[in-house]
Image 1 (cartoon, rainbow, N blue to C red):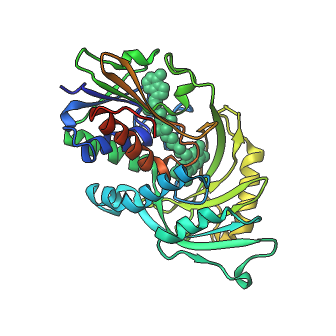
Image 2: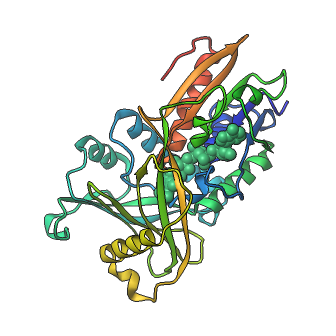
Amino acid sequence: MSDTYVVVGAGIVGLYTAYSLVYEAGVSPKNISITAAYIPGDQSINYTSPWAGGNFSCISPGDKKSLSYDRYTYTHLAEIQKKLGGPSCGLDMRPATDYFHKYPPAKKMESLKEYVKDFRVLDESELPKGIAFGISYTTWNFNCPLFLQNLASYLENLGVTIIKKKLEHLSQAFLSPNTKVVFNCTGIGAITLGGVKDTNVYPTRGQVVVIKAPHIQFNMCLWTNESATYIIPRPNSNGELVMGGFLQKGISTGDTFKHETEDIIKRATSMAPQILDRPLDVVRVAAGLRPSRHGGPRIEVEEVEDGKLVIHNYGASGYGYQGGWGMAHDAVRLLIKAQRGSSAVL
Ligand SMILES: Cc1cc2nc3c(=O)[nH]c(=O)nc-3n(C[C@H](O)[C@H](O)[C@H](O)COP(=O)(O)OP(=O)(O)OC[C@H]3O[C@@H](n4cnc5c(N)ncnc54)[C@H](O)[C@@H]3O)c2cc1C
């Protein structure tokens, strides 16, 4: 029955969750439906995943759970890349440098050092003026819209059903009497969806400028108290470079602004002047809303009736690609635990 396990949400978190259900919980793809208001290929300010940069960087917090989400995702992504046919799926590795105005949490650096490829703390002599700390490493880069489409097609080819449908209430996700488990992966939708209406969730708006710059094949980020400036090359995109950005808490407009575009171009090109080795060719400007949550992501099981379960998995903020598979792994572990008879909150 395709609706035994229902994943609400076809963003990166919902797709990672469906993938984990198949490969970690051993659920037959034919028993899984993904239902979502927006699916890969759609664009909406209420659908964050297509707007992400996206890469694995130092954006996520340094608490134990976030570190584990990042670690799990980074160390497992090669498996998805292989299953989806290699780097042309929109997932590949590139060099990265992160600069910090202030020292980042030591625990985070210690954790990254353990598993991130080519991790190196930069010598003081390598740091630009005004920078307190820097690291270089090899990271994962996503061509987000392409990767989403490829992951969704991969799941469909396995036998997962994708249904485009907006829900007013989470109870509608119990598509039939056969539905036993619903995964709530609604991102920013968790603010308004009946049965959830999580007041801890809030948007963190970002604006990005996408340019054609095939000569830039490295990531760079500059983290200060006031801003995050980053450049992210998109694999298999004919040389697109995403430049950002903004982290505007509580702002929910999908509009884009000329003064923000100019500010991003100024910050990104002074951080990486090599961008201007070719004339600036702006392809598009876009905005998206990171699904942030006070207290971090909600990964929690709820028994609704007669042993039927809802497993919440949302609140990935600015790190759904780089940590979302770790979140999905924990959500699916909750299912496995509950099915063994001991429901719990991780
Ligand atoms: C500018 C920008 C840059 C970013 N860069 C990075 C980066 O470099 N690396 C990184 O890891 N992350 C990055 N992020 C963050 C990343 O995009 C998010 O963490 C991620 O996309 C969240 O995915 P999600 O699946 O939780 O939410 P979404 O992608 O929003 O998906 C939610 C899904 O739930 C569905 N849904 C919601 N409500 C309902 C309802 N009522 N009925 C039916 N369906 C519903 C939606 O239709 C959608 O399918 C960036 C974000 C932005 C905005």
